[in-house]
Image (cartoon, rainbow, N blue to C red; front, side):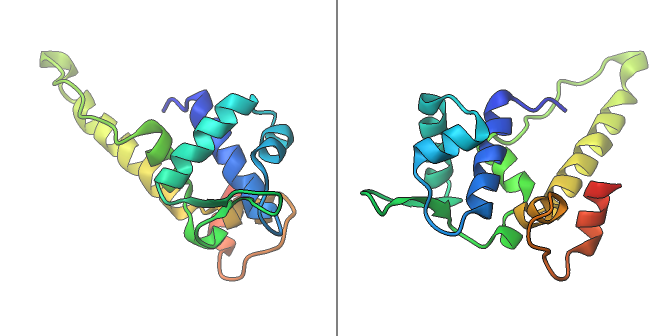
Length: 142
């Protein structure tokens, strides 16, 4: 699986918001995650349009998660930034069995990213533990 820089930055931005106590200005997200500011603005806009974050203008404004971190899977963010993966072209002759292998690989990737939430990642980084999520958190550590 190829994860673009945009997706890596988006995941970092979402984690910064998951760890925040309130709204965070875009410049704070950009600085904390070492994201170029204009790129961060575009990513936050994309995440807001997808309904993963909310925002408010002004000195008391900023960005925050639209749902609790335990309800946002890594797959939700990846789908926004990478889009839905298109079907592969058919494999010819001897390589035909690869289609089944690629389909299984995609299925496992999707399942894993759907099981792990932002809260799991925060907890694995030494943040506040999330009750009832020990399995996914344990998977991150081991």
